[in-house]
Length: 142
Ligand code: HEC
Image: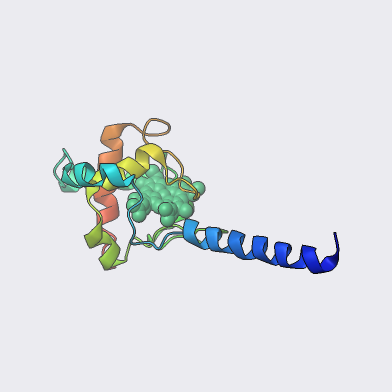
């Protein structure tokens, strides 16, 4: 094949792969859960009230065995990761958009295509997951 033929094909492939890369990196406000589950998960309440004791349990998990702090950092803004950085938990708009049930889905499934790993069922149990969600809420607007 001559260069005249190969060049357009190469350029097209490059262009398309760039497009899919961007499409894959959704903006931070788009839901992370499968859309068919969204309504159900948004209705799911945190079964534990946000008492100071519960938030303290969540804080210990965040800085301890959940390993959240390694990516999400001390102040919740997150460290820079190649490709897809962690969520900025101080972002008020993001905090107001997401329901606890959606965050629990991410803790159980990770965020596919990103560095966010499965946590609930692997390193922490479900109750600990709900507790750490309460702690993440304390970063709102800091
Ligand atoms: C290895 C790095 C890493 C670790 C460890 C980690 N996260 Fe994440 N987390 C990420 C990345 C990257 C994202 C961004 C994913 C995305 O944009 O979809 C993220 C996103 C999130 C989100 C936002 C999901 C949404 O719906 O927007 C929550 C909540 C979260 N993490 C909680 C936690 C908790 C709680 C822990 C600890 C139990 C934890 N993460 C541990 C990397 C990590």
